[in-house]
Image 1: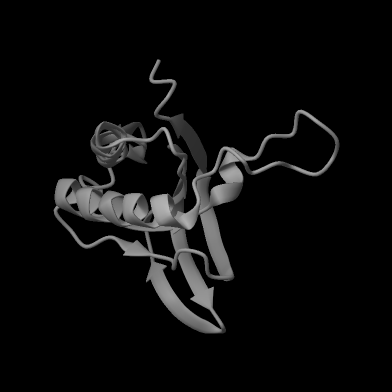
Image 2 (image 1 turned 45 degrees about the horizontal axis):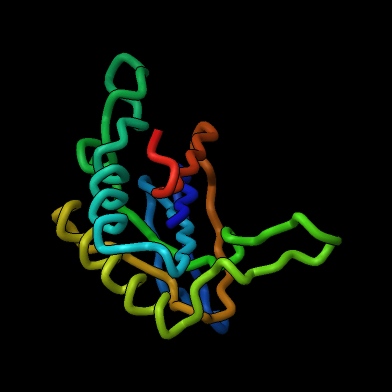
Length: 150
């Protein structure tokens, strides 16, 4: 799994002009899933995200997690995170899971993330044409690949 984690002062997801998800302070997570991903990847990534200390404390130091900071989370599925650009100029998405594998993994990730976060996690809609808006706070953007945990 690849997650692009953005600390935001606000974010929203619209589908067909209707707001599906909206938060103020928190995290917007773009999530890419591949066939090699497992339940262990889901658990590890959910815990890592919830515990990342990327929010400022009273001294202005990034020392608080999203949970500590009282923030919220939106997760958006994004198969293009697994794009391969080795050949030519058209990315290949062969590494990205097909919906029959990716949808159950995405749904499991949402549940696990909510359990670890101890709060409801908002989300986009898998496979939908989504319009994602955000104000990146900082900016702070972190990329985590469960296949490269170093």
